[in-house]
Length: 216
Image (cartoon, rainbow, N blue to C red):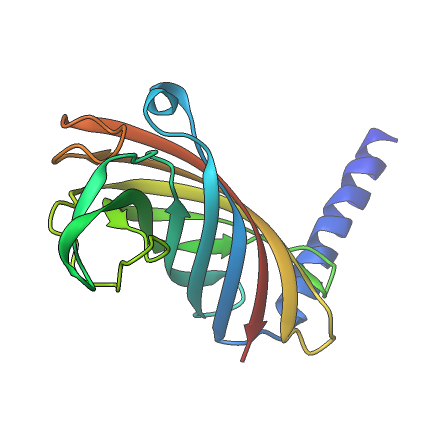
């Protein structure tokens, strides 16, 4: 009886793998996502959860492997409250500062074979570059979008890992929605940016995003 169960389970797995291999796929995959960037561990002592947007491009070599590149940006995680010196419409002046946190992941992913044609499961990882910068908001009265003379920035390299599930609306697998959970671990160094100290820090983020994408 136990042997029969094992044979049945093995057959289901092989059948699922075969169905996944027969599924058509597109080489180029573009995504846009919104969600939250969540600092974890000691990172939460100087950074806080912030809105996140992201763009991604993936080139799929075959049914199992894809190379990925992306750009993600969080808004206000460092709580920069410093007055920044800028070039306003009336000459140099002070405006209320802000901050942006950029994350640039470069890596790849593996698609997990399964029997559902409209669903993709994937896991991946690679290297990531973080860049934090103080900004002068264009929403300040009298600020015309000129240069920020006192804004600081810092950055550094690390790595990331992710897990994704996506659902395709059509049988041609062109348009899809999905959810990605991403963990980023990187070291940044440089001047203070908002609440981030002017020290070498090890930064950890858990990013959760809801994505819309198309493939061609």
